[in-house]
Length: 168
Ligand code: GDP
Image (cartoon, rainbow, N blue to C red; front, side, top):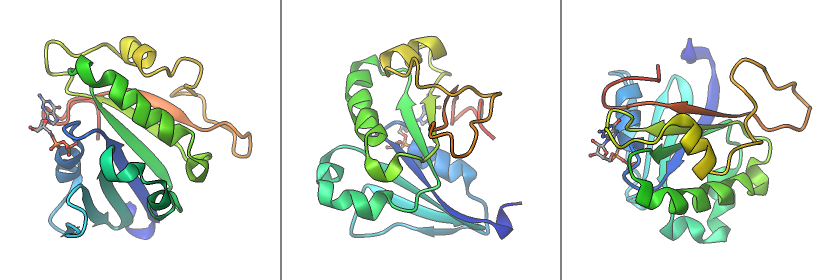
């Protein structure tokens, strides 16, 4: 299904959120893996014509001059949050807010993935929506956003990348 499509999807989030693990689960034997040596916190692979790229937020990405390189021609953003690490929710929210305010991404659909729900201390979906400040920004999973309506599609899902729950 993916073979005739082209596009670029970014997997973003703080370090340790589970981006690399998710990318690994999505990859198959046909995948060309490529780890750019110039950025240790960027990983890339291509699935069919779709380029999947993970970037750790924080640090280098706060250099605004790099944003255009990373964020132009992006078809979708998957923002991973470690749902079991409450100590870093605030930091994750800050990075997500920055992305949501980035002009290049103004029309880009976002999926917020609350990962690691296999861990006992993981926050609930309504809890994550609240701590990430997403109330009122959600566009709903059943109702499709009309193209041209100016509303950015934004959905939240909870998952466990290692237990293969909640994505696929
Ligand atoms: P990245 O820095 O965002 O790329 O995060 P990684 O993919 O390297 O994952 C960071 C750590 O979290 C690793 O030890 C993973 O095994 C672990 N991890 C990733 N996903 C899950 C999950 O769903 N549940 C649990 N319990 N651990 C996970």
